[in-house]
Image 1: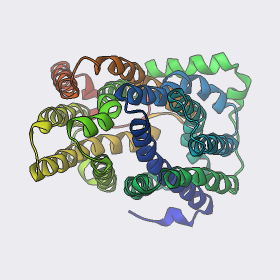
Image 2: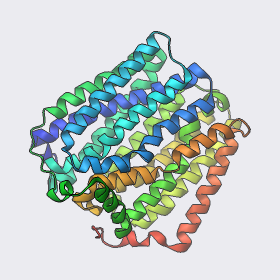
Image 3: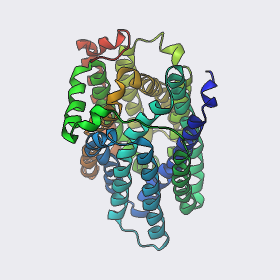
Length: 413
């Protein structure tokens, strides 16, 4: 990979802001998940918090994106970081005063992700304002790789800090918001908002975004694949803390190690994208790689509690390594190809629709799991997820629905 894009000072600032943000969020993801469960001892609340984390993405992003399209993206990103920093500061204060109630975990998660629902589509669109041509491809790859490195560091730090001081872990995330806001504000760029988008009403832009989903077949496949993958992945996301604590009788280090493995493999798959993307057909990535890996991981997790000692840890590491390689391939393909498949004028709205519809069922699955785990053992839930993953894989192979991705990539209108 070339590094000529680093000569662009605006990109250096954006890259630094994104890296700091990712590091802080990764520390917080370990700390907040573990704090939620250890303070409440409730698997159901953990699932509810996970649902609250996803609901703004589903309910808000597609409706926020038309607003974002009519505004300058830099200001949205700066204010989003500031507001999230204020919210986290309030949460840390309440935690320090021992004033937290279970509903506050859910409320805090929902509010911060409501704000994030505006920042995400703005951030995706803002990259095209400071990069273009070959710089854009290189910048996207470098941004993703740098983010993954920071996730590795943040996840490792989170696993250690949460055991030492939850305040330190949450404080790092608090600081990251303010540094990110300062860096993004310092970027010197003249943003031009499409006159057509400005003249359109909010509802015209919203309608146009959803109509684009029906016009671009490859974008539609991206959305449906994300919906299915995120739905099934949310089973693990909702229950991993309870599963590690109750079924494996292990510490937060298991969660931290899994996240580190997934992040490292994702980074490697991004780095080697140009190599394997030419050897593996995209349709295979959206079938065998995507749903075969899910079926494999859930089968392993189903039977893992029956294994004890060091073999359990070895199987845990190997299974997440295999899953990480395959899911990393999928993530790298989507990250790199998204801005190429979607027209620039639709980027914010397409990102909002992709994130929303791609995660549409996730919070509802989490809410359902909050009730189910009161009656069904978590390993049995994982077995059901493995069976469903296998059925979806078989259906996609039989219908050949993803084969259109094997055609030369490009935007469709």
